[in-house]
Image 1 (cartoon, rainbow, N blue to C red):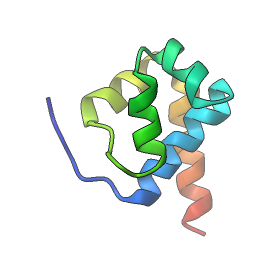
Image 2 (image 1 turned 90 degrees about the horizontal axis):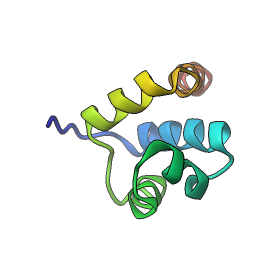
Image 3 (image 1 turned 180 degrees about the vertical axis):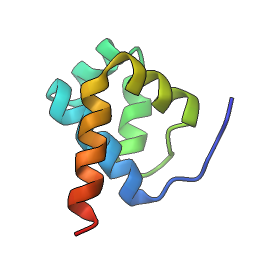
Length: 77
């Protein structure tokens, strides 16, 4: 398992993409098979997702990957 340090900005971008796709972190936790408390910690910048989890989510849900890219482009402006 790989771990990397993500900035709060990156955490917010990931959670924003997840919430936009699934309508909230509770519903997303069920669909993504990620514990609700884990998503809650990501959302409130208590912890960062590990690379393996993000890669799995992006592979299984390409729309989230697209939203993460779009969010990155918007925040860079």
